[in-house]
Length: 251
Image 1: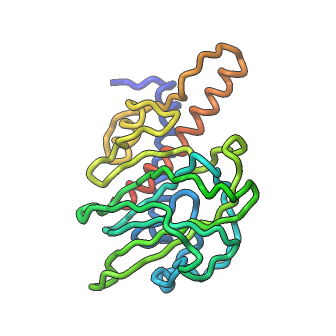
Image 2 (image 1 turned 180 degrees about the vertical axis):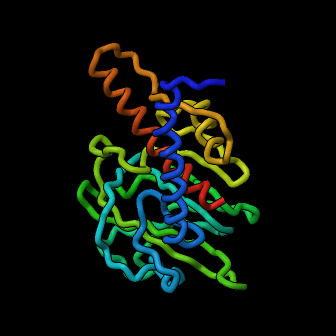
């Protein structure tokens, strides 16, 4: 079958994105422990400090991610088995001990879950916390280190903003769950239709299927709305493919 030049031209950026995403995923897998924050991003990881409370890192606070006071979520990515995953929060500007954190919510990874991308909605922060205040979100979990099952830690530093002032960026838009056995997401990220999500995931797994990413439907027919929709489609495509690459590299 002869492929049209238009089809070939349209496929090249897509295939290039998949290769680049998987390369990025392989690099990312070398910079994290068994589980890590994908969003908000956590502090620099080193194997030597991943078991040191409270943050599993010797790095100081250098970057803070904008995080909404209400309606937030965190993305976790796992490349190995882990148990008793807990997420805590500190409202101090520089927490240095476990006593500086309070439980926020908990989730469990089953013993047979080796690779996954997970999204969890977060409770609202304390009503006393205001826009511009600092916080640190802590990840605590158990995982094998050699033959020992021990605690691991990671921290993501944030600056809180009102929900109406929060702008999605990077991986923050992509809230869905995927396991090693389920390459396609069980919950499709906002701005990506189900068939497109399945096509992208299948392509990462080695399928020869093609895929297209569509933006969320809009009732506006104005030129500016059309432009915004196209921008959203492009953003959804690039972000989703990047996440797919991270997951594929870990499988």
